[in-house]
Image (tube, rainbow, N blue to C red; front, top):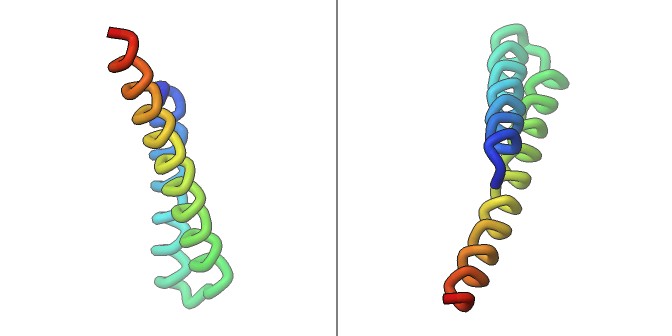
Length: 64
């Protein structure tokens, strides 16, 4: 996973957490749900990047 992807995913996750917190504090269920969705999307992207990293590690191990 590239550093840019990591930063982007963490920023999206943080943005989602802020939306969820503000939505909860203001009783805005739509904003709260949007925040949870942003977090879930960021987590899914991070999981996909981890899988790519693992595949690359396996490929590198077989090259040796």
